[in-house]
Image 1 (cartoon, rainbow, N blue to C red):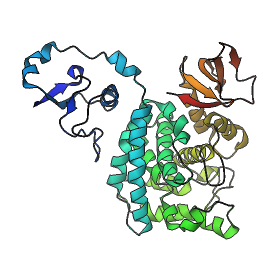
Image 2 (cartoon, rainbow, N blue to C red; image 1 turned 60 degrees about the vertical axis):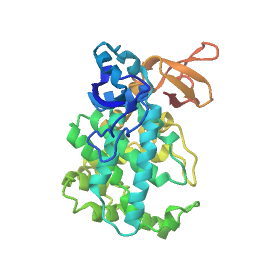
Image 3 (spheres, helix red, strand yellow; image 1 turned 30 degrees about the vertical axis):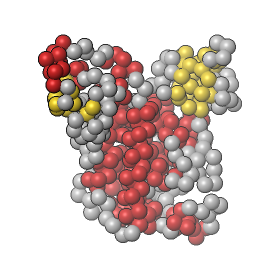
Image 4 (tube, rainbow, N blue to C red; image 1 turned 90 degrees about the vertical axis):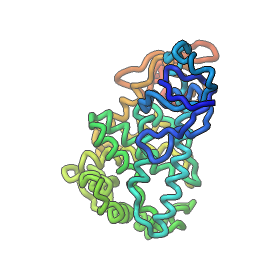
Length: 362
């Protein structure tokens, strides 16, 4: 066997990766001696990797030029969920270790946070509807760690939808990820309490944006606007937020982006004291029940992610029926026309308000 540096088009599914593959990340996105699959080809496309080192028998060297090209139309159709879930699980594991170190008094290693987040941010930006299924991965026990990572991903998608450039999108995503790092300074007894918090306990939780700001204020690579947004992400336009009860004109758009990402994931996820709710139902709640608290343009950006559903997308409904999207209605993207799998019946979710899309099948 010899190591060969080959363009992606000449790779063969089943051969071995010869070297760890990085994509501006501290951790490899594919490790040495991994057996190549179509999912890896999809990762290479997402990260714009043009060539990699693989192991091949030496007698095959002269056959490279005539090797059949892999059909990239096939790799485009490869589902991303398995790839994303693997990276997501690794990120949760790494983030949990960082969080534990903050509990013990360590400073934030911003390079490490950025390195672990960039790969999954790229995947989420490539397929924005990933954020609609994040609540499927979260667990009540490790909710806080999932929440931090998910808030960062949702923030990234919203920022890109709102027209922020790549640099600012990444900055906002890192800000969203760190927005609750101050919870490491709140007693774990309070954080893990299964019942309702007492007034004193809730007041302690309400201090976490202050703790967070103290932890990030001296990190030079974070822009002042991001630090301010993190501090304000629990403020509300109508003055009902915390820690300062700021109102509309004093609250930055960036803080509202993180705020909506934070609320969206919190409302969709399983908690110690509450079951998770479908993402599509929560989007409707945020728009209808939280009116006056959030910037409507950011809510519309969240709604537009739903509009990225393509005709033919497979979904599970809240009544456990399966079906596919026939048409996404511009004025009601959370309630498309669905063709049921079992009998071909077409239902309009605008007319069946008791039914929601529960998840997207990737």
